[in-house]
Amino acid sequence: MPELPEVETTVLGLTPHIQQQPIKQLQFMRDNLRYPLEKTWIKQIQGQTIQRVSRRAKYICMTLDEGVLLWHLGMSGSMRIEENPISTQKHDHIYCQLGNAKTLCYNDPRRFGFLKYFKQLDDFSAYFKNYGIEPLAKAFNGAYLWQLSQDKSQPIKTLLMNQQYIVGVGNIYAAEALFYAKIHPKTPANQLTKAQATRLVKQIKAVLQAAIAAGGTTLKDFSNAENKPGYFQQSLAVYGQSFCPVCQSEIGSFRLAGRNTFYCPRCQKR
DNA sequence: AACGGCACCTGGTCGC
DNA sequence: TGCGACCAGGTGCCGT
Image (cartoon, rainbow, N blue to C red; front, side, top):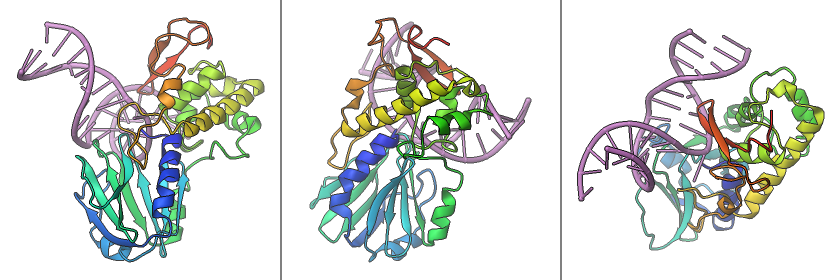
């Protein structure tokens, strides 16, 4: 799913409906998402107010009076707001009724997503200790990526998608950014020139921002808080495409670390 | 340590 | 129309 732009879209869409709202009722329709949902959370969470909604990496964070709710959308998750009376959908797993009579619904066909409740902020912070830099942060620049890459021989695409180094970039946006930067996905990270690193960072930021502006990419399951799809799939240059928008060459693909990897053999020479 | 392989799930699509 | 194989935005464990 949901890479950074889809999570950001979800956060932006949810915020006006749920921020500063008390949680009146929390319902788990099943307890086996990727990680178990613990029944004891319900009592602890009900009655608390959602103070703030934010994104970290591919996670949605809801800061409560005490602790944080941490959501991950997995591959097929989405969240939407329903007005009373709510219309239920197949694969709705969590309902959260708010003080404003709206209901936050978590839907996830494949159930790779999850919800965690951290009562202690320290535990919440600790959860992210092995996560890397936010790609839209100012500190993420060409010099940073070049430095990060120096001791790594793995393909640059694999590095981009490793959340330990850079968060939020997944299979779609890694392919898109590498295409615009004219870098072959298999290029060993430590062979990037400084100029390439600078180009790549610029294109990562540009593609993520463009995707956020378009409301994310909907290949199949993703929808925003209004239950509407994103539009960025119309702007994809290489992911899932047949011909290069620049040179009209046939788009190539191969498997890299188990993921289908799209590229233009002419624009992205090794 | 770093990497590939695969499991976790459902559902859509394609070929027979 | 039906069935099996294969594929999908992510993550994490297990083996080499």
